[in-house]
Image 1: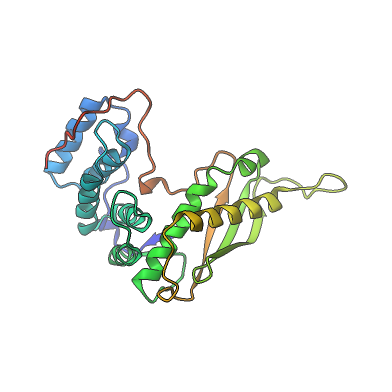
Image 2: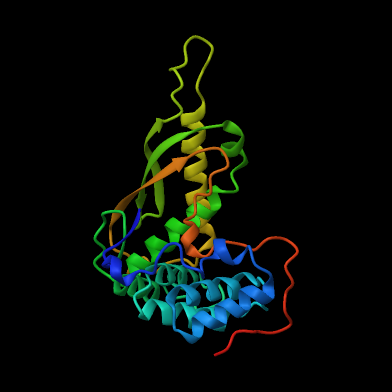
Length: 255
């Protein structure tokens, strides 16, 4: 689990008027006006939301440079979700220069951790974080998992050095009885196969890490498996605005 060691005072209120859940209820003109108000006040939640909007092209033209500027400014002000969002982009090389070490440095500066693992260097930390988040994204597209109806908690161990992942345990949480006779519960095998496949697909998509720079570290992450679940942290910029919103021909936020 991604955790923050920052004091609560360093974080903006969850019910911020600049939260994407709130902004998507507004028209584009209203949302942009509100974001500009927040940016003028140097509100970190406004910077975070603005970065999301530039990233997704919601109400504004997509602009990776401006996205990175806003998330960097928010991260420098102590906003850990912005640090995590930008670190993922850097690790993946999505719209910005790919650099695992830079991603790890950003995460370390924000006081973030992956599970309970203690990574000795920024390069390994950045790669592990990017691999984990990309695996979560890949898991969303698993048709087998979606159709299985599997529900429970899966503990997955990631081996950073070897690029391998395995499901250590899977515990059902749906209250169902253990299968008997011909009523075989396939959920465990489906979950194991889906998570392993997602981790392998993530490795294939990412920039190949330098094996001489990777520390031999294993870390565990718990996945809450449920029908229709979004396995990627919603605070990492995956929110997409509702259909029908107007895309502007150029940026509308004030610098």
